Image (cartoon, rainbow, N blue to C red; front, top):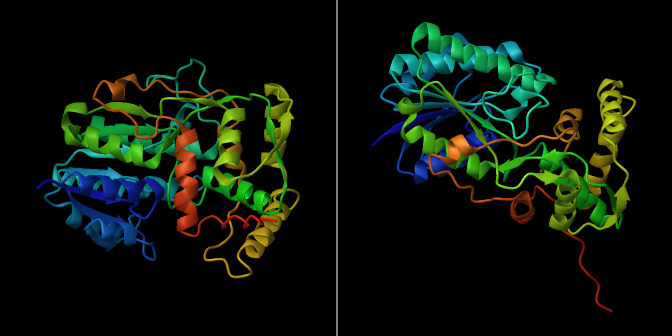
Length: 360
């Protein structure tokens, strides 16, 4: 039986990787930092380890766990602001792959392209990240390609678009939570008129793409693959899908123009947190506690400016390279995917239940 070592196994993509590889008949070895919730990996039958990859002793543990593995899939990402830790973590995982003689599958992101000049954006597009997330992701990718050239690392890179899925606590999951709170309060929400094109992908489909390329990883050495669904959507349609998924109402459409929107985004990202983001998140937290009668099962969602960058410019990605291998997403559109996500999130307590409908 082939074995796969998966780092970052408690994260959104990492947990889906554990499930997908286990279901495909692989032996799964999962690791994440101490204190992580690895219940999903355990349920998938994975051999679980708590390892601080950025530390020397953690790197040694990872190398021991990688022995005999046929693939090392690196989904760990400490955060956009932790570039040195992200690089140290990636180096430890790459060293483990080299020692085991296994290909290295790097889970990166389409944020490495920044705002693509050519659409649909192909894998060879110039990498000009415009935010900390993209810059850190690109720094890790450059390091991985350097190891391939200088140390003989067998490398495959997956670049998922804006990703959503069960167990998520950031990104589109926060937007769903805010829309759900508005629905409970009886508030209708405004959406932009058309807006930029946004490309998304469900975490399940990212994991299936990883299994697909992992089966023949050595044959794909040196290649990168965009991972996205079939239907990039205007922001208006994506916003409407969010409202429909949680039962929120639309107040109307707001005029949208790219240049003023980008200026507003720049202003929002550079304002001190106490001016906008801190008061806004306090308000969300109060509404979250009220929705659960003061006893929420999880911490309230936090809205962060990084998400706004993903919604600020036209972005859609060419996935022909991955499709040529037989890839077909289970969730071809975010409209269906978000409906399913809302149902699953409510069942897990990640979204507040809707208010009961009173029948006269």
